[in-house]
Image 1 (spheres, rainbow, N blue to C red):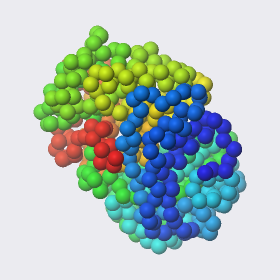
Image 2 (cartoon, rainbow, N blue to C red):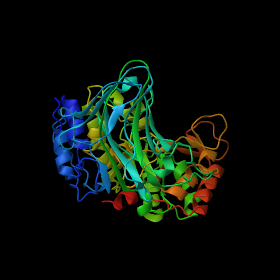
Image 3 (cartoon, rainbow, N blue to C red):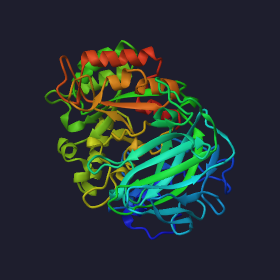
Image 4 (tube, rainbow, N blue to C red):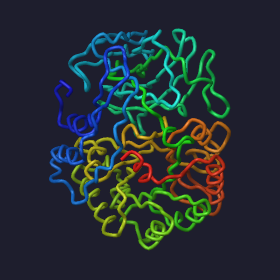
Length: 485
């Protein structure tokens, strides 16, 4: 629906992924919404994907289509004619509040170009009718043209012309790690109460991570900061309110995921989790199964059949995992996906869920988006992006967010266990505000962990106790998806 000229890579991403289910009805100024269009069937996405990069016909084990339904907004501003928002700020060089050349809803969006000086550029409106965000999360639909010059994205929600506000710093761009926001993509972002990063004025966040209020808001601002290395052009298509995770899980939910098929997951993690009736999701490297210190097929089946674990995919070939999919061609990635699904199904594992090797979902060496190729084979794909935590339903199922490197070591990097279990940590925020906290672990060890990919058996038990004490439900990824399929 965008009227801009599209390259094949850009078309693949926007037509096959980002436009699925983005329809909605709203008048200028924001209003209560009626029904929105449902996401298209999986076959339509697969057909679009197959036409990109010469990947050929759909694979024999294509996704079933059990993807999350598009969340209906209860309030929306879609930036059509007469929207009344202002594009300004010291960091704004130029703006077109009614850009009719690039958009994915209605007939226009807001376009802004920054000054390239690192100062704030924004699209905002104050003095709106007071809004109640209890049980709601904010949904943003945006696009950034050149993320290499992007520093961060922040959303402000407040009153009194921002004398009081909460802030979500929901993206800080990295030159090395995987980025949720990538150049030229239309990106959907969910902002939940568990992810508030700061409070100003009369607003505050308690020691347990609970905001002082969730109602009475009149001011909204979408802010962009370039990295002072040159200007950034960005588009804002919509700001919406949708039901948050607490509508399904009042205390949020946790998914315990394990990458790389280490047999310590069977030998050490499974007994610790069995004690609480918890089941996890293992993302497997098929090539490694039955070798060295990795799981066997019998162990995988035992965990699945008798403890309710899910056996997902991570890669077929160890070499593909080592190289990362962004280090391969599109055909090589598609072939590895295909072999992985065939291996899983032939061995009795029907999970349609995947985790990217090293969390990388950028482009292949020949320019095809890896997360687009994933749609041909799996229903979701997990990253290790964790600037904000995941939600029900996820904003982008092929970029599931996860907190990785959880360990109880000292000075070895990653995410310290205390960052989850301490007062006001991620578990408190999950229980008190609601989100879908996906945790990424790897190897479990008997003694002291030596790297950020290890956690001790004692540390894992502490984590299980902390989750259980807060009454947070533990769900596999496939169970989570079932709630909105």
